[in-house]
Length: 139
Image 1 (cartoon, helix red, strand yellow):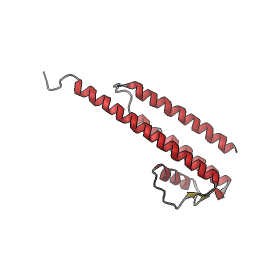
Image 2 (cartoon, helix red, strand yellow):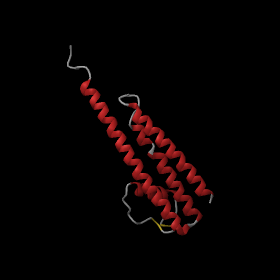
Image 3 (tube, one colour):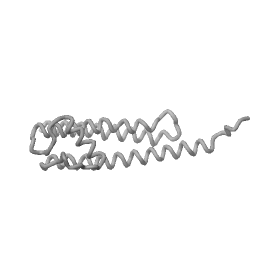
Image 4 (tube, helix red, strand yellow):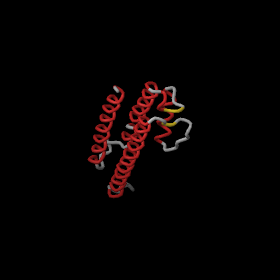
């Protein structure tokens, strides 16, 4: 069960990091130094955490997943789940694996929704700033 503890700590740290980054983005206003691209880079640790969790789960109990045997398989399953594609070649069979997958789906939906909302809000602020800025036609 150390995997569950490790995953919980990792997920908690990711939630904290994402909330911190979202606050930074929302408080940045029109500050050009705070780039929206930093939100996208948060997806890397999310993918890594879930891929590791799937891999460790499959190694501990191979009956939890059908078709997941390697680290590449776990990364593939994580990205397919993130993309909501679900090819079906790798899928959760055991109850623990299904709960883990449901956590990823819920997490992905919330995080991506928040990223899109913050990014669009920042773009609107930057566009409004440019339209009300000084005349750049010359002078």
